[in-house]
Image 1: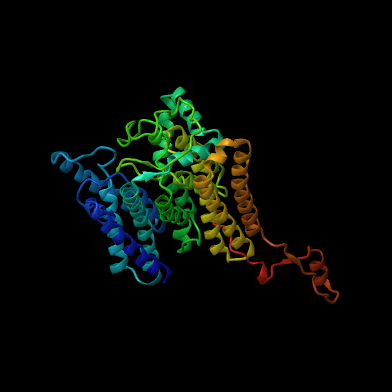
Image 2: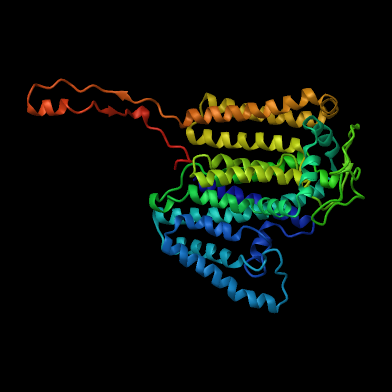
Length: 459
């Protein structure tokens, strides 16, 4: 029932976004998804969705699925060349993956029954959700640019004085180390979904043997972050320093829209902020930094993984933070909000999996209050933060650290196992068997209260 309810809500949500996008003369997520069945698809994690679906398949079925997807794309490629289709930015591949996922959905309905049908449909749904999330995000960003003509960048920029305007410093560092740094950071920043799929595949690697999904995994956190984050964009529209104080990027913005051409070489002066009008193309997607939130989720979910994956999770987090600042996409305070946002959502999902208790509820409430206080401070206290950075900066970091500390402490208690009770053997009459038994150590027995669901990282 939970999966059916989630499916109905997702369909309603996609329909609403489709209608909204159509109102602005653009195709919505449903249209772009259907078009990808025939036309060259827009860049997106189509093969990532196929990889996620494969967690429910055997290795033989995985090879067949991957081979079929690549074969379909190989057949369609010369047709698209002949039709002079746009094949830039990875548009040449992806249709085959979508066809294969839909094909397995048909197989589940027509050739499977009972639990096997449900498991295969869950796998297909997981893959399609990842693809739909990308299409949904694109539509959300379009809506933010059309419905929020004014942005609050000047407020956030003033509040960022509390942290010393780290985006200006990171921007100069990236310029000084080009082209190596920019190539590496662009790769990390643009392939965040690929990193998430790799981690999720590791977490779900036992699904074919156990024939069930773990109760919590990275994909859940990713989807919830992507669902809730754009709603904050609508309440707090911000475009980022490269747009508000620079030449723009990715074909949008420009100096004519900027408050001043300062990023990243000229220090930002302390001036009274005001809402500013910006173009109708640039997404208002800075507050909070969802790239930071997703990178934090990857970092958290790799803590119980093998060493190589743990190191990769740490590298991806640090590189993502550097890229968001160094390319001018975010202010430092965006990243602080993104960390709090991610850990609060992760805490809520973990609390649901573990069973809501006082500590879990307190952590979620604390994270929500800190996140709300950050947004209110950025909006209504930016001048105080800019004029007193010695006080406001440490307070910002302390607020973020309190959520991190609470998360680490609470989840550590959830993951710990209670001490086993020692049960002494009952007296036995003397005899050869009793003497032999007495030579063995006392056994430890685990009571029913000691059973605990292992953490998703261990599963």
